[in-house]
Length: 252
Image (cartoon, rainbow, N blue to C red; front, top):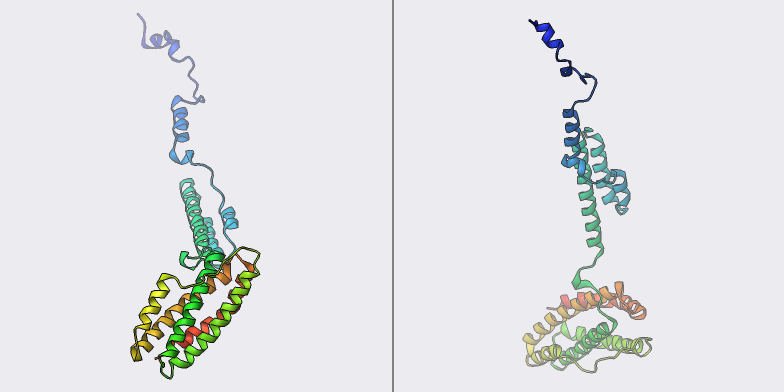
């Protein structure tokens, strides 16, 4: 009859291959699970210093980005937190790039027109200024309006002559309009139908709007116009138009 000790010895296969230093299957599964963790699959991200180098060099951008890099450097070195901070830096960096791009892009309403469009608008504006001011003089405008109208006729005849010389001498084929467009002709007809104080008030309002539009047009073209000669001329003429606008705003 076998004892308990004999029975243990009769089944040595239970102890074969038992090595306490050998890694268990569970450990392999643990490593496999860790490698499949969502954070382990994230792509490599640039260092905060690299992000700082790529941000456009302006005091405002550099100051904000430096603060972010400094904050990230002080965070605990937990892998998950580190990756989240890098992702935040990338997001903020992209936002800074976008803000700079938007800041450098002029609004649609202030972009310079083509050379031909600029010539058309300036020529029609000059014709309207001259004809409406001549109309004001013929209607015996008041003491404030009369000297203003006289100056408008004189100054806009001068700019019309200058523009004609630029167009005729331009290397680019440009043409000058010979009459008012429908919009300005209607404004002139409506103004002609008025008289007295009603005429003076309407004339003053029209002059303010016309010169505000002219200032905006010449400012845009003097900054980014495609024709260099017209661009230079626009910059030289702009101060006179601003003076006209200031005078028009003072009309009673």
